[in-house]
Length: 380
Image (cartoon, rainbow, N blue to C red):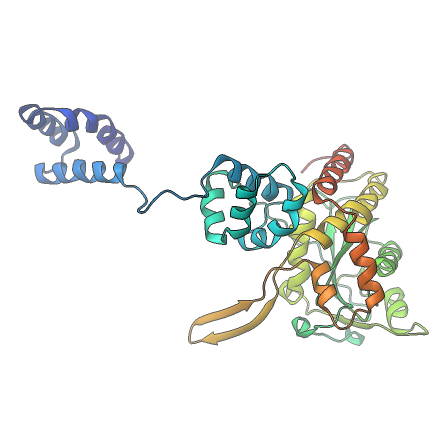
């Protein structure tokens, strides 16, 4: 008899044993020992432990947050914000609750006081886990590689304007033929994220989208860091960044086959692109303007104004243990307002833009545009 069958047999026999009189319990035990081959004392102990395990409850009084209204509001905001962790969700709540006017004062006060561990307990039954994994598409660009310096200390940049960049391939499970590619960028200081779509990996198309990204940034481009892919390591991008007439941009790269050198943008590739677009193949060029319409409008506003992230403050090693400390979750918009390197006029413009936005309307706009985009999807 297999262990699984024995567990099922214990579950079936337990209720008969529990409510039976003493003389009948003896007969049930005889049957139990004969069927499973257990010692009598071991069989009694197994039935008693099964009973205690089934009636075990969490100690203390019931949680005051375990209310249908609170759970529903948390679920709605959590899903709309694209499944953030509990610490980021705590930072989201004060900025998102004003857009839900039908809530009672009691529910609002409880949600403003809720802690991250409590959110974890409440959302545990409804939390979905995504386990998609991609594969590397970077092809090394040998041209000019030695002339572009390697930089590994990007996390020390506290001035907005230093970008990490990477490409996300919408090729499905095959790299054959042409397909859409997303050029993804993130500012190291603020977390400000911009993305653009292009057709294929031609350096001209990638360069045009980098130029368009620079025009949309609320700060000056000071540095640009990429991997060793040929779409970045080429003379056209070198001339555009390093040989411009005014304010040349620092151009650096990561080490070949060390994707963690660009850990910031690798993380955004997953949270900002893959979790929304998935691993579908887009081999129709008509999808490119649709993706760019999404990236330039609802997508950019939603991520930069309403979704907070944390930044690593320090990392120390104590024997075999690595201790990391992070700051409080903040949105890229909040980090720019707190920066001393952003002028007052830009901060005022960002604030006026923020006051006109509604995260739930932006999310609905994203969903509507994604439906049109997915019509061009070939296969995951």
